[in-house]
Every structure is written in C-alpha cells, then in structure tokens.
Image (cartoon, rainbow, N blue to C red; front, top):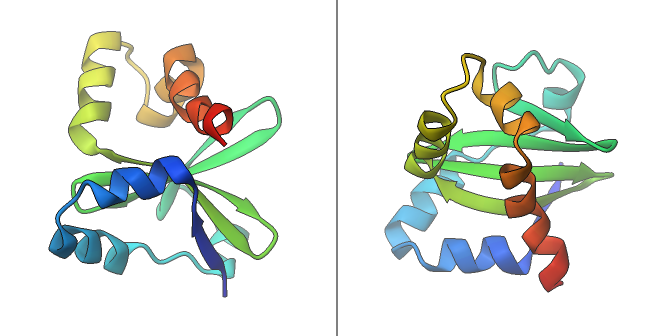
Length: 118
C-alpha cells in the first residue's frame, strides 16, 4: 500500500472543488505497487524530465499528476482535463498527450511551481 500525500498546490486545487466532486475524484484514484511493475500505459501516463518521473492518472474530468517516492505517492497537481485539452489544441503537435507534455517547457513550469512554493 502507498501513503498518498498532497503537496500544498495539489491540496489547494482539490479544495477548490465541491466536496462531492472531491470524493468522486479520489474514489477513482487507485494506485497499487503492482501498477508500477506491470506499467504499460493503460492505467496512467508516464512523463520524464531530468531523471524525474511523473505519472498522470485520469479520474473523472481531472488529471492527477504525481510522483512515486518509496512507499509514498506525492500528488503534485490536480488539473481539469479541459486545461490539458486546451493546451494540446494550442500546441497542435501530432503526437500523443504524454509525448507532447514531456516536450513542452510550459507544462514543466506548471509542475515546477510546486517546488518553488514549498
């Protein structure tokens, strides 16, 4: 089992959602150790930069971006899917979502905001 930890940024993003929606999103967020052993892109996306691996989990209309650190899951961001759809539409790149995000510095700045505020 993993301990799930929300950093300040992701906790604030969750707090903006209505309580019922928070519960719905969290009820879908299941991450087990075997998900990392047999990871084939079905359960969550994988993004890598500078040796750091971020995972993307789809829950309802939201995308949960997290990192695995030992027995902990550190939730970095919780974003509405339209945010990413708009981003992908603007970028107009003919590759998959993970590849597009991985190559765009604006996406990494979004994730890096967390480290600056902690």
